[in-house]
Image 1: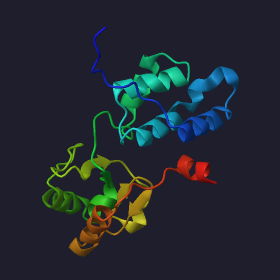
Image 2: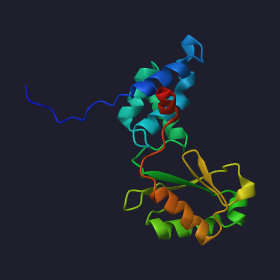
Image 3: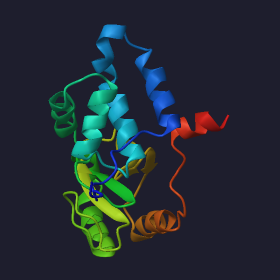
Length: 185
């Protein structure tokens, strides 16, 4: 028998498995599909910021679903990335209040500074992926960018944008995932 070079099948970490089990308990036993969105979020965080077809299959197996059921959801919602992304995904609000406060200029500035283009393109250094998103519900602080769970507000000056990018570039480690923090206690 010859050795195979096939990549290992993805597996959730023990902490993620515990969190998935906890989430599933919030739903009736015959309604595991109800946990699909939070489990996809866990999967995306666990596997480099995107949900590959293999990861989608893992989610399906975890929830006793058909892979197509996961694929339909993952492809519908823009919050799930279907291809590899940079270390930081910058989600730029593009709705009215942010546009009035300069989100178009912000987007152009970010494209110049990072070398990435909006539409899910990643910068040559692998640090930044730029995406436009619908309302982030922080209109009073426009224009705004969301990176993971953090909002960067009032990005209407080059100095504020530069400060955000410097902070992100200086991150040595990725933030601890919520279920990892629970596992440490």
